Image 1 (tube, rainbow, N blue to C red):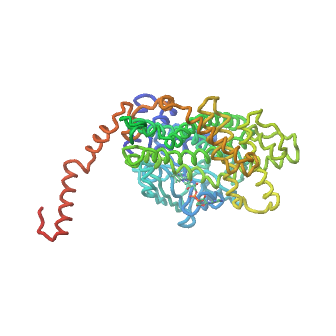
Image 2: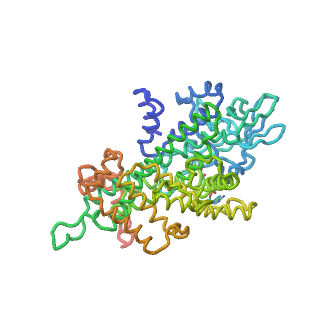
Image 3: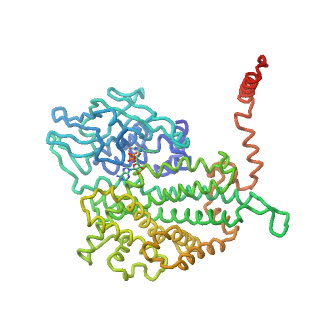
Length: 578
Ligand SMILES: Cc1cc2nc3c(=O)[nH]c(=O)nc-3n(C[C@H](O)[C@H](O)[C@H](O)COP(=O)(O)OP(=O)(O)OC[C@H]3O[C@@H](n4cnc5c(N)ncnc54)[C@H](O)[C@@H]3O)c2cc1C
């Protein structure tokens, strides 16, 4: 909370723009209570509010008088948005909505910023009109008093407590129960769907219009994950350059840098390439996203939506899987000290591993991507000349094995064949049993989402040796799929891909790798822990840090000394020495 407050003071002192504030929050490296106020609450009002709503709410959002959070998930339902139970019942007599949760399982849960800070929540609730229920819509609900910050009448609100790995420690993820809370009609976001004062409902022109802005958070994840992996790999590389174990070859006295071991290189160098890959792909995705949002908000043009929705979901899935795995591998590459808080590796993992679950659980949103791809394939089957999104073009291979989709690039072609094969398999299953729920296909859908994302990542990168390493590493990990797809047919072909990856790693000298991590231009303070400082004084810094821990200092040290004496006195049955 103190950090959140200080950031707002700095914003005022320095006239930061909203983007500058967002960047400052990002640089704090901890999810903070004020974060979702801008990234979700304000952003969604901007995208889904009417002009009048924006005029009324946005100035108060920007001044932080109104502090909001985004409340969708409930105690018993998250992924299943259709299963959400919070109700907003319209009363034409008073022109108000009565917002309530019918049972304890329908209370909101996990909501970032809600536990302590927010005084408003953007609540996803089922719209109930005299004419019947109209599905989920968004409502601005005041939850705490603007004067006293106490919960308002009918509101029960609190914090859900500590999270796994002590991650999200600063974030006040909260719960909310509403009992008959009344809000004016104007508090329903009505840019797309509308409710007249007499309760007449006007649905959105296109049912996808409202979720264009919701793609925003998802679209930002791949690049953020790329940068986080970049930090973790930079820490590991710097540490492993300084760390030496075992004698040098031929009796040389200087011990070897642990980065020079083949297995350390094979673990870290592909991760370095992966970090670059997601930074490039994330940047490309955000460019596409902003183009789509402009079309959507300015002209209600949804042309780009299916492509960006599928890409942002696929990239979110693959980037969070790959980077979370890479974060942990980078920590392990530092051996024992990697497990110390001083390495900083654990902290990055703890903060970022939840990305595999929030903004849509990876296995659940993979089905959305798979569905778009299968739909596009069925369309192409029916009308071979039909227009399909640019990044779906490889799916022609599922209909014609000889289609040239990769423009002569052999590696890209392998990735195309793999994705097209998975798609063809899934499409056959769907065609054979169209009534089966999509969840029945969730495993193959997750493999297809990964394959789809891998293609986008590869084509987003400029041609460099780092890109080659990333492509080869992607192919090595995809070998089981490539074999299944018949894209790799002999043991020798599989071996050649693996050997090419090893050769690409071997080609990078330690100085290249150090240069590639320096190129991220991280300041020491951007890298948590003490082992990666630019001056290379790893052990001195570790000793300095250890000396400063509370447990080794005056008051606490003394308390603990007494506790230790009490334990040994008790064990030996002597009279207390204290
Ligand atoms: C750190 C953090 C912050 C969050 N912040 C917010 C917030 O600010 N606002 C908000 O509204 N929510 C927030 N959430 C909630 C989050 O969006 C949900 O937890 C997430 O969408 C997953 O939904 P769930 O919890 O219902 O998981 P579940 O759907 O219950 O998942 C449980 C398991 O079942 C599997 N599963 C479920 N359904 C299917 C299916 N159809 N097919 C295949 N597998 C399936 C999943 O893969 C998973 O393994 C946050 C969550 C976390 C962890």
